[in-house]
Image (cartoon, rainbow, N blue to C red; front, side, top):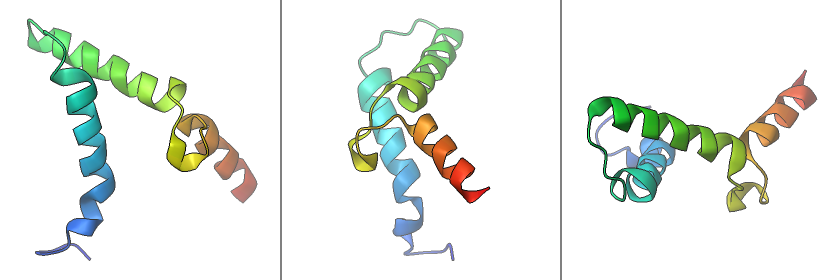
Length: 73
């Protein structure tokens, strides 16, 4: 499972954090921690509910997830 040399385990979350940093944090001029928290919260909402992802056929992640869960039930 996890351990030294198993970087593939973290690839999805590492990619997300890279996208978050380059798409929001580095280009925003946050003046306080509370502004940063609100900005990150808004970005994550947009990332999951509004943004189309090419890796899942240009669908919104939450819609794709919900359809997958409905099929499994």
